[in-house]
Length: 190
Image (cartoon, rainbow, N blue to C red; front, side):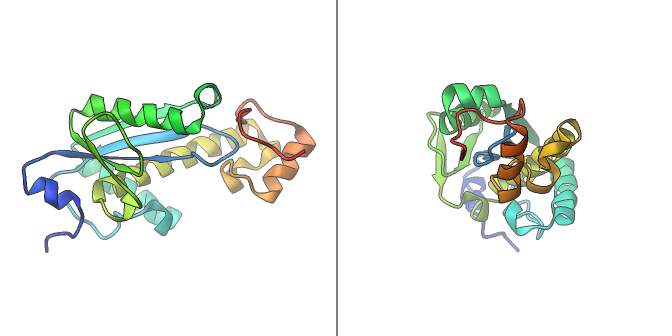
């Protein structure tokens, strides 16, 4: 069965695409991870879909599948320092642009305009298998990073909320102040 992903339209024209997505634009702490994935034409798998629709175990399995079959995976971490210097939107856009240019493929992005040849798709991770694959790789990598930060800064509970602005996280920031991985450019309640 031919998948109903937008990627098929490009594959039918012999255009190699790279799906680009990010994880970590919204959190108050930690990096943003931007990933590009080039899949073999007409690849499809039931586990490759929007990373938010998968359990942690399913994401881990999907990660293994993607890393086994992908023709190319490009990862760009955007540090807290870069996020604070540029702003999260611009920092993410620059990382996506770098991935698109590095890959030399036609880029499919999740709602991010680029200068490089691309198509920007709203809810792209539900329309493009390449973007969905990128979202899975980015989510697994970022979650692993936040688990490591949880061991470095246990007072904040990063393993629980991955840096997002939960009530518990905000309470821990009030109690402990900001850690070195908190984004200073984000507005925090006082």
